[in-house]
Image (cartoon, rainbow, N blue to C red; front, side, top):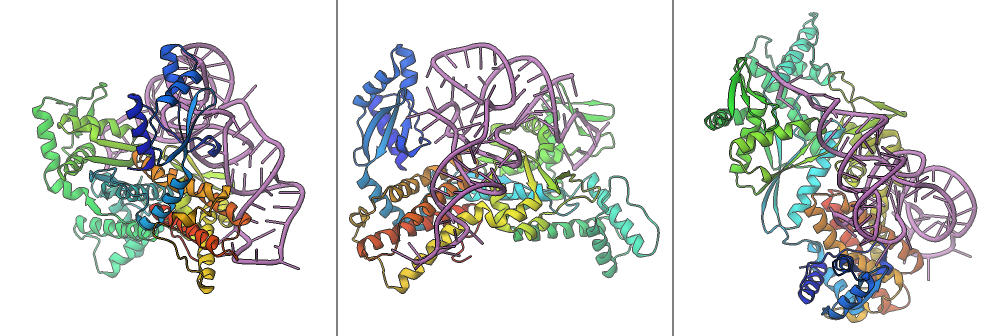
Length: 536
RNA sequence: GGGCUUGUAGCUCAAUUGGAUAGAGCAGCGGACUACGAAUCCGAAGAUUGGGGGUUCGAAUCCCCCCAAGCCUACCA
């Protein structure tokens, strides 16, 4: 249990009502705050400030960590952490090391996060990078907060776009043989297809080879590209699932049987339809006898559930928004627990080059790949950039600006703080100023009494709550914002005070303080999949 | 036409889910390196939260009506 939770419990126990606890925006207003008095004031029709005063007199505080309670503003109740407790916390933070901020919030619940899942028809583009950064960070955060989270990538290697891929490859192959050929309508003209055709030819695969051979080779080549890009981006997937395997398992047919038996499907125009709650019925089996995309997808999600996950999280692009309802309707027709499927929409990335928005069409061969972004702006910068935005906001990515700003980039601001601390610690080692703290250490920490130092420690104490919040909301973006605030406090402190000075006890206390800062920067960055360099 | 999402400082984005004076970073302006890294710091400026109404102690956040952008609206996946 973290401090916020303990305080929360103490307040609720002494008042016997539910209260919400928040962290005020300004640190002058205390460490925690509640607006419960307003709600009660309304019920009893009395002035909020009076209600707040009355509540304050009734709250039995855990005095080991709360120092001061005051009524502020129109009726807010503000709590301040006890100084002695602040020092004790610093010792605790140092002691917990890399585990600080982790928790058992998830209670070992199993979560599967599926993301990217790009069609194997071309290289990963920028949007996939955004999804990859968010999904990967989410998995890290969930695992850090006591869930058992796995990442999964679904490879859609069946269907029309794979036929088009095959035909596109064949076209390029024919060109190699000096024949004239044209990329089919809706096919893929990109350079990478030529490469695949060349490899096939080198391997002696003939054009009249079994169609599956060419398809499989094409898909595998592109999946290999995806894996390489993701690895370069620091993203690792636990599972790679192929649609063809889902089909082979017979899942889709079972879905059809089940839905038909329940009477939720009907035949019309030679096709089999699923009844939708809104009347906009969807095709399950096309009139040519093939499954529509929806069916194997339902089977795939049933497969996920069958693997024992308590929650499925899907990161979808906005082009899949309408698919959510179909999928959920299909799953509930199969008696699956739809409420255990959470879909997060990761909005588009609009690329801007030379002040103009550019399209992201794979068909026109006009797109910027994830690899290009990583090469041009770097892995850490682009990850930080993607993670700073909440998923549902449309993101403008100006590639020139990203390059230009890279020296002044927020990620460097944070990494610089960590490098600066490493540098200080290096110097301290050279001067042999190793800290010799007492058992608990907090006696010496009481030397840290400037405003800057206290603000830092208070910020550190809040870290577990930030992580928890990010975890509960499935929103990694709280982490980079916290980091920026922490780095600001550190740089601020650094400009005003010296860590290494003539005053040995103070020096030692401050060394421990900056160590704690570096440690938390490192943890937070690792939750984002970003490095914390000792030198830059 | 209908549905989903978005609209916050010149630009790119936050705002602990209905709370206090709406916060950062870039860009621009004015300052600070003769002690631990100036990739830094300090200061000033920049907002009618797209517009209008409503709900209430209290709204960027909830409801209604407009305006604008993106996506969906397939027997494609």
